[in-house]
Length: 113
Ligand code: 5GP
Image (tube, rainbow, N blue to C red):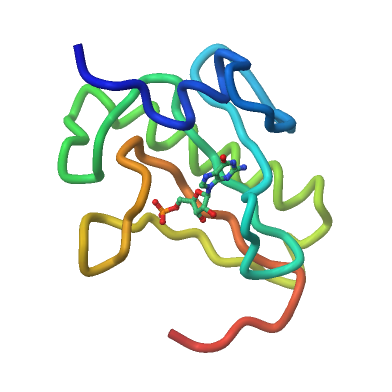
């Protein structure tokens, strides 16, 4: 069996990290190394290695992840000021954890990309 991802270990409480949101399919944590005042990771409980591995069957899950990020942005009061959602995929994007996660970044003026 493939090794557990850090996120699976966090979900199983094998690694300490405050879970700031959780439902049946999705959970969210604060990034340990934030790049902005708000940097949340929205993570599916189902381990999918990269965005390349997302299938049609996951379409609803991906949509729910975006809606979760939207709700968290509202709760964190950055919905109007603005935020960035991003997925890193593989080497050139410097993906480091191979269990997909949506970065929710905001709380400051971000640089243009
Ligand atoms: P990636 O580079 O794969 O898109 O993003 C992985 C993110 O996970 C990084 O921003 C990194 O700071 C964060 N991260 C890595 N290990 C941990 C951890 O143990 N706890 C938390 N909360 N975040 C982590």
